[in-house]
Length: 250
Image (cartoon, rainbow, N blue to C red):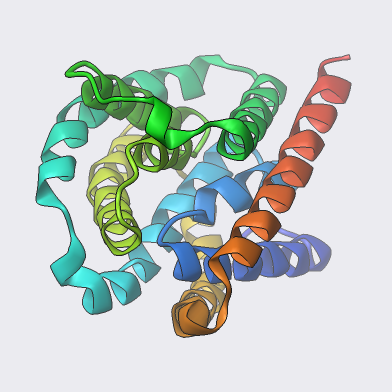
């Protein structure tokens, strides 16, 4: 089953996916946020986006099974419609943007999210009617252009002080719904190849193990320690993505 991937690339991809899915199992989000910047150092953007969407769809059910009753359908209804519109905008951007530009954009998104989470005081912001639709549009667009639908939603839920259980379950349900539309869209436009699908199948067992392990570790990990470790990781991967993208453009 050929994927056009070397053994070294496959090993690095396994490590990246394992780390990302453990974090995603703990938090309910983070698979794409953590994995996209380093995976972009190994593969082209189309492959990375395909991997994240397939692995998200193949593993998020682990969270949904245990946290189904905590899903806030009200939040889903407010962000999903414009996110679906954004999917088609993002798929167009994926076709026209250079790979190095996408690396830089991905890195900027990740670092911006980390810095905002470090400094923003959620209680200072009150929701406005335009916020949820705008967040949905941004999330959907970034989902199919740089492979990261998470940062806009994570930031929005954080500043809205969504309770942890609802945050985790609702984010997982939202990403699943988005990728059920986004992946077929990319396949129909030729942005996802057969080798991408084969590589995703090879990484699926690792992703399932990581997601399940992260879900089991929830009760043992301090929220503060998890937050700090995640933010440091985001800053590191975002910086790496920007640096390599800039070097590639030069």
